[in-house]
Length: 113
Length: 113
Image 1 (spheres, one colour):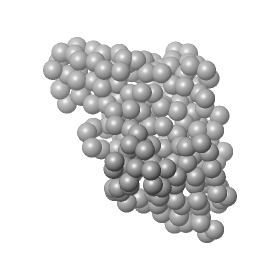
Image 2 (cartoon, each protein chain N blue to C red):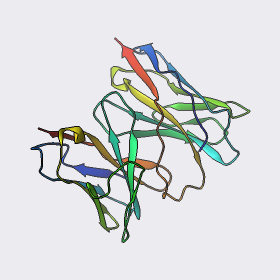
Image 3 (cartoon, rainbow over the protein chains, first blue to last red):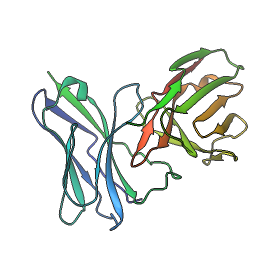
Image 4 (cartoon, chains in turn blue, cyan):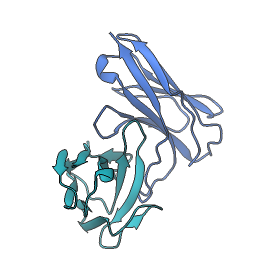
């Protein structure tokens, strides 16, 4: 799986958009970008994933650059409950489920009231 | 969506005793489950891969005789921490892959006193 680089921490004001960047310059053509988050003392939670097109679901939007070397997770209206560590993971597809996800350090997002 | 349930969420045990943690996939079958350990302010570290009907695969540095894994059915994997010591105190998390993404248990906070 390709290596990812994320800023260690970010702050965001409540109600504003949180934009979390991820660099994955060595990503291969068959690798997806996945985002998970971990709220304190809980297991990680899946947010969104994509290959090359931008994706949106009820939780977030994922913007992937045209060269696929970086991406941005967008939480459109951050709330205090979005305070968590956000992990960007690059993963080959199809994934048979027989290999574990590898977690880097992630970005600690602090949403401020 | 698919759910992975982990039990107990919190356990305190005395040094030298054993503790069993259960991980269940509630609405899907998982031939492979994963066990992670997370120390304070650190990321998730894979301990072992649990395979239904066969022996678990342990990561380097993880003692298989200390961390016993049993994956007796397609929906249940158990991790037993044997002869627990204070240094085994940690947050243990299990995971299994659904159709498109990995799901994680709520985690088990183990404190050995």
